[in-house]
Image (cartoon, rainbow, N blue to C red; front, side, top):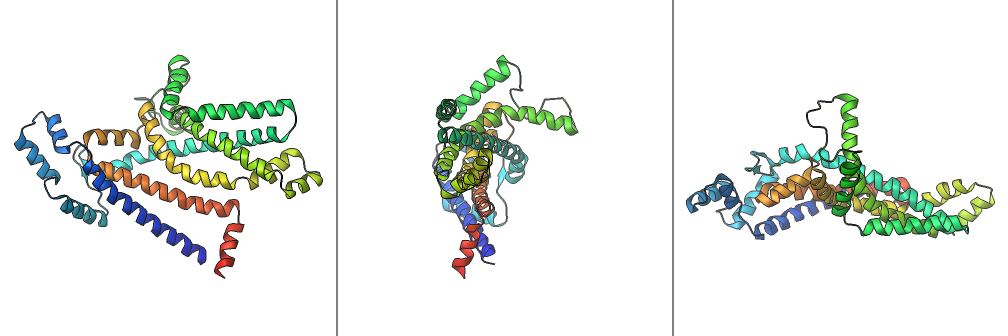
Length: 336
C-alpha cells in the first residue's frame, strides 16, 4: 500500500510539473519574435494589413494575452491541445502520427548506449583492476575513445556517419524511415525499417554510451574493493563470474539513475538527429512549427516531451526496486 501511494504521489507531482511547463511555455512562445498571422499571410501571398488582422482574429491572437491563456487552459481541461491551421488537423492527431517514430529512435538509441557503454565500461574496469600491460592498454584506449566521442556534437557525428556509411561506403540508407515506394510488408518491412534505424540510433546512442562507459568503470572500481568481492574470489569463483555477477550487478545503481535522466535528454537529442536523417518523428515537426510560428503544435510538442521526461523518471523509480530490492524494503521499514 505504501508503494502504491508513493507512485501515486509521484505521478501527481509529475502532472503538476507538466502543467507548470505548459504555463511557462505558453508565455515564452508568445514573447518570441514573429507573428503566425504574418507567416500565414506571407505563404498565401497576401500581406495587406486587413488580411493579416483577419487572420489574427481567426487564430485568436487579437484577444488579450490573459484571455488567450484562459481559453487555452479551458481547452486543456477538455483534453484539447488546439488545432494546427498550418497542417489543417488537430494537434494531438498530428503528434500521435509522429510520436511512434521518435519513440522507436529514442529506445533504439538508449539500447545502443546501455549495451555499448556498460559492456565497454566493464571491460575498462577489468583492465584497470589487473596489472597486465594489455589490460591497462585496453582501459586507456577505451577511456580516450569515450572522451573523443563525448566531445563530438551529435549534429557533427550524425553528418560524419551519414557521409561515411551512406555516401562513401553505401552500406546503409541515408534518410527516411523506410524505402520510398518499396511497398514492403511483414518481416521485409521490419528489416527495411531496421536498416534505416541503424545510422540515427547508433550516432545518437554512442554519445551517451561514452558517459555510461566512464560511469560504469568508476562505479565498478569502487565496488571491486569491497569485502564481498574478495570473499567471492576466496571461494573460488571465476574472474568473469566475479566481475559480472558480483561487481557489475552492484555497480549498476548509478547507471540506472543516469539512464532515467538521460532518457529525457534523448528526446532532445533525437530531435536533432531526426532532422539530419529526415526521420519522420517529432524533430522535423518541431522545426517546422518553430519556423512557421505554429503555437498550438509547439505547445503540444513541449507538453509531450515534458510528459515523457516525467514518465521516464517514474520508470527509473521502478527500476530501482528491480536492481536493488533493498530500496523498497527500506522504505517499508521506515513507514512501519
